Length: 528
Image (cartoon, rainbow, N blue to C red):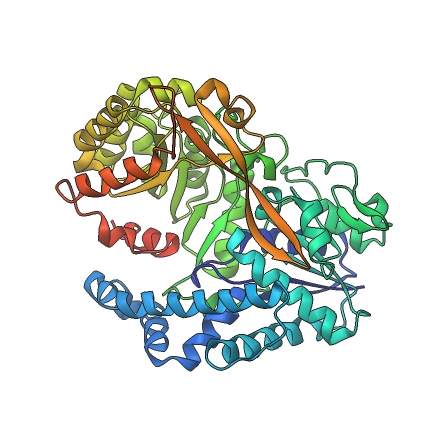
């Protein structure tokens, strides 16, 4: 059996897709007889643009040159060319959406010509081995128009007699799949949640009606199969969920040296944040043994030479990070790594110092707010004084801090915002980067299930695509908030985010660090 897997645009060209590498590795270990072809269509798209646009070609050459890349001023000087490249990519994404939604023309003058050439190039590479089915890994909703455009082009090129097209990836859990499969018949099935076991079943020739987790088009409507069982992470004979990047062109990514993602755990150990929809993409929480994980990283270092690794887990607890650090030191492994964390009491100064010795150079902290009332409301399980102590201790240990904040949380007031600004200002000397997200309401979360209790009135889901007269909605909800006087108003998040932008100009310049991709940020902090 021949199978083709593709990661569509757009994402940063520095990113090696972890999900694709894990899926391919699982299939190769479980079914070595399967002829598997991997294609990072996102990297192919950026390389395609770099060949056609000289300024972007210069950016690519700079990012891949270790003798020039670490000049922060040189990186910043290329920002205008980089922004222009993203505008070009955005134009191609617009073409992908137009074509996916049923546009008759392909190859219109301007960006349409580039889109047609790129689309046909990707499809030709997908179909080159005459696969039985094609899997498209949609990690972000922004990739969906490209995935649908590819599916339509495969159907056109094959006259309806080509491979079956299956969509997977984290973003699939954020879609109304019945609407998607009805509106886009070129997509034959979709897998919300973890994809390794469904893909293995497809490769084994299991009837589609029996493939776990599969949502598929069927006569008279859309059918959903039984849920996907959670794949194990333990170091069993099949080495489940250990990525294999061997089929990806690591030297071609836009980095001066390899930077790879890794996975210690799946799911979320905490799992109580009332705003979070990430858990819809995964089964129950499980993790690897720290020693096994360290050996996995050592083996990857030996294969690819990658010295920089970022943990793609939803977050890793302080006790687990300490065990990983001890295992890395025991292996004598020279790494520079990043992790996501909850700033709670597990992160003691001693553990943070241990992490630094083991190579941790950057932690992204889910802080969300400086208001204890809001932290309690959202179920974060953290305390403001502890948060402040953890961030300070990490900075003192030599670990870079990124604070991830959410503005406009339900029931937020001017006083809550003042408390958040106060926390940021007190920690400004220890903050290296900060993200300022706006609160988003997703169906199925605790806030959506009890919207009225939190002063929210749900208007309905957001439409993201439309084809054949049918709309496709995401699980992101449009809503209004109830003000103190009982009236309904637009969400407060925009107001709070705008106030932050005014405040930050007087506080600290985070801008240079914020311009880097995750991989480039880790490379920069890795030099500390």
